[in-house]
Each structure stands twice: as C-alpha cells, then as structure tokens.
Image (cartoon, rainbow, N blue to C red):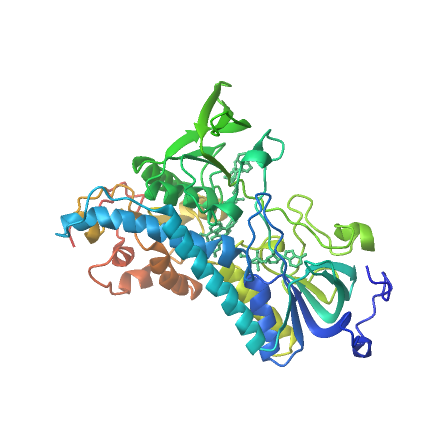
Length: 516
Ligand SMILES: Cc1cc2nc3c(=O)[nH]c(=O)nc-3n(C[C@H](O)[C@H](O)[C@H](O)COP(=O)(O)OP(=O)(O)OC[C@H]3O[C@@H](n4cnc5c(N)ncnc54)[C@H](O)[C@@H]3O)c2cc1C
Ligand SMILES: NC(=O)c1ccc[n+]([C@@H]2O[C@H](COP(=O)([O-])OP(=O)(O)OC[C@H]3O[C@@H](n4cnc5c(N)ncnc54)[C@H](OP(=O)(O)O)[C@@H]3O)[C@@H](O)[C@H]2O)c1
C-alpha cells in the first residue's frame, strides 16, 4: 500500500495532491464497479460536467472464467441469458414451422459451440462499446481492483500489482455481487459451476443438474431443456419464492411438461467425480429422509444469495474504520443505504445489487445510478422509486409481473378487500401447431372497492416482458381495473387478453377464454 496517505484521514481530497507520476489522482466522483449501476452513474455525472473515474475489476470465477467491462448483466447475466433463451425458443419455432408449411430438415440439431461463440462475440462487442462510451464522455476508466484506504481514498491495484491512489469528493460503491457456492457441500466448489461460467462454456454442458429454484435456476434449466439437453432442477422448497405462488407453479408445470425434470424437496449432500469423468451427486429427500444418487455432466449451482465482498484493505468494512462505518446487513452482507442511496458515511453511496433491500435488476441499478448522479450534481432532488418495478422471468413460457402478488395483496389489504380477475387463454400462434396452452394464464389483482385500483398484474405467456412493460406504465400511473377494462385491445394479440379480463376468482366461473 502506498504510504503517502493517512489511513484514517476523513478530509475531502485536495486536488493539489494530484501526483504527476499518476500514483494519486483526485476526482469529483469515483465509482467503484463498472456494471449496470456504476456505468450509468459515472456517465451521467460526467455529462453534467463532473470529473469522474470508474474502477472496475473482474475476479475470475473459481473455474477461471473471466470477462470484460460491463458487469454481471452484460457478461454473465441478462444479455447472454436472454440470447440463449432466444436460441431455445427458436428450436420451438422450428418445430412449429413445419405446421405452417416450412420444410425443415429432420432431425433438428443444435450446435452449442456455434451458439456460444456468437453470444460471446456479441458480449465482447458490448465490452468494447462500454469502453468507447466512457472515453467519449471523458470518464477515466481504471481496470483496477479497488479497496478503501480511508473515507475519501481508494487504492486501485492493477493486474500487474501496481497501486494507484484515487481520491474523490463523492464515492459510489456499485460492486454488484457474485453467485454463491454452497461450500459446505463436499465437491461443490471443486466440481460445480455457476452462472458465471455457463454462458462461457465452449462445449455443451450435457446432462445438467441445476440446484436452486429461483430466477437463475429456472431460466438456465429452461434454456438448456429448450436446446435439447437433459436438465434437472433440484429445489429444496418452493419455486420463485418472492413471486406469486400460483404463477410460480404454472411456470414449473410448464417446464415439467416440456421435459425439465424436477427433484422437489431435495437437497444435495455431495458431488464426486467418477472414473469416467461424470459427476455423481448424492442428495436427500427431505420428506422421506431417503438418500439417492444421480450422474450428470455438469452441476450448476444457482443458490442465489450473491456473495458480497467488501473492500477495505482488510477485506472488511467494519474492522478498518471501527464499528458503524458503512454498516452492512448481518443476513446478506449488503450495504445499508437510505432513500438517497447514502451509506452512514455522508459522501459514500451504494447502488445496485450491493445495496440492501434493492431489487437485483439491471434497470433499477441504472435508474438509481442516473438519479444519484443528478442529485450529486445538484440537477435534481428526485429519488429512485422502487415501488411497482416490473420484471420478467425468462423461462420457456415467460412470466412477467408488476406490483403485488395475490398473497401480498391479501396480506396487506385483507381477503375481503381484494378482487382477482383472471383468464386462461390460447395464444393464436399456438393453435396451428397445436401447442398446449394449459399454462397460459393472466391475473390482475385489484382492490375490490370501485374504481378497483390495480395492485398487481401477472402474465404468463409468450413475450411476457414486452407485454408487461407497457402495463407497468399504467400501474405506475395508478390505473384502476375500470380503466384497464376501458382500454381498447390490439387484436389479435396475447396482451389484449389483459383488457378482456371479466371473470373474478370470487365468482367461481370458468376463466377459460374461448373465441375472440
Ligand atoms: C444469470 C443472471 C441473469 C440475470 N438476468 C437478468 C435479467 O434478465 N434482467 C435483469 O434486470 N437483471 C438480471 N440479472 C441481474 C442483473 O444482472 C444485476 O441486477 C445487475 O447487473 C446489477 O448491477 P450492479 O451495477 O449492481 O452490479 P454488476 O453489474 O454486478 O457490476 C459490478 C461490477 O463491479 C466489479 N467489482 C466488484 N468488486 C470490485 C472491486 N473491489 N474493485 C473494482 N471492481 C469491482 C465487478 O466485477 C462488476 O464488474 C441477472 C443476473 C444473473 C446472475
Ligand atoms: N430475469 C431477471 O430479471 C433475472 C434473472 C436472473 C436473476 N435476476 C436477479 O438476480 C438475483 C439472484 O437470483 P437467483 O435466482 O440466483 O437467487 P435467489 O432469488 O436468491 O434464489 C436462490 C434460490 O436458491 C435456493 N437455495 C439457496 N440456498 C440453497 C442451498 N444451500 N441448497 C439448495 N437450494 C438453495 C433458494 O431456495 P429457498 O427459496 O428455499 O431459499 C432459491 O430457490 C434475483 O434476486 C434477481 O433479482 C434477475
């Protein structure tokens, strides 16, 4: 560590300290983490005239996978995931195509290597694009691993081990998180992979066990199945815990009826490598206490609770600066922040996945970063509104939602005050290829009292992300059920089914849509 700084200095940076040899530099704003939130914050502040630096460093995964600038979403999250989901959906479309008169050579085969290379090349182009954007906006980018030296100063260490001190008036921590390994399970770290690796595999993962039952687990198992691979999901409790549980069940029912295997109520005990290279997993069924084994080519841990490493030079926030300095949640190790995204240190902020209580989603990290930059530049006092954030789970049948689940609505308002309108519908595109539409389902959760404010909207069907985005605007504006019913549909679409929901759950009538 460079010795020029006092470890416990709380003084704001002195620009005259700018070291001509480049060992110490001063900025108005220093952003640690070049992912969704950090890049958005840095670019916005620079555009508003601030002197800004971004420090980003990617620790390779335990498997040795590494990637470039842009954070989780670009490299090991939303982007490669959605492209592989698209690859899987195309497989389904190829099957449909013959029903529409296309002559498709049989059998249809998928080449993982080709898909992975194309996806990885696109991701690399995004890495490059982010670097160019930073340069264009005069944001200084350092490929350094950052750790705090004191409350205004960060030490950046380059790959070659060179240390540079960076001081700033304001510091934004946007370091995201990384998938967790269940290290208490024998062989988990040695033989398993996570979402940090799956998108960068050069060869097909083959027969795959996915452990976990949330977004990452179901999305990955979904596209693997869609690509024709044998995928099994091992879940210890319920799927998609934070979501409406009726919708979650429909999501997993659809996956199960399209070839994904589910081991419910099971937890893995150990992973061993057999002499033929296959992985043997031993698990226990929690209900019967019976042990069982299975062999797989790949074990993918999707047990969430991303690992949050904090960055003082001792690796711990509290020990360096005393208790109470940037406190973290004891459960999640995420940094506690207030509505201004401020930590307990007035000039240090935390945004995105690393901040406690925030949705772990790219658009919320981006918007929080932009709004924070505007506040820091004195351009606005607008705070990020984390209510009614829409999201979509990109399982083979997509599930989009915004607002409250039925359970949450009932818990908050009481069963008597909540009305749920619902429908099972058949997308027109499912008819000719005779696709099963048993799980295509929509529900709108409202207050029962007129005009029946919409509390939540849940859509399970093709292109759910596209459908949900528009309705999210309505709900953000306080739309009522009456207004939804007065909205004219676009025919023939799946989205129009939302504005035709006439059957309430309470009525007990059959909610299956027939005809136009
Ligand atoms: C498989 C998967 C699929 C996902 N799909 C979606 C989706 O479809 N839609 C969606 O909205 N969200 C999705 N997400 C979530 C989304 O990717 C994250 O919410 C988002 O990337 C968080 O942004 P961030 O800025 O907080 O952190 P990140 O994007 O994770 O960026 C943090 C950056 O900081 C760097 N860093 C960490 N420590 C240091 C340090 N000490 N010094 C320097 N740099 C450091 C990291 O290497 C990283 O580059 C998905 C996540 C996963 C894992
Ligand atoms: N489409 C999207 O927008 C998208 C996609 C992917 C990720 N994300 C974001 O990324 C975040 C992380 O997602 P995630 O799916 O990785 O995590 P998550 O939401 O935290 O879910 C973790 C899952 O793993 C299970 N689990 C935890 N520990 C386990 C153990 N030891 N053994 C077996 N199972 C275990 C949990 O089961 P229990 O329920 O029993 O605890 C749960 O099903 C999400 O919150 C989301 O915001 C978004």
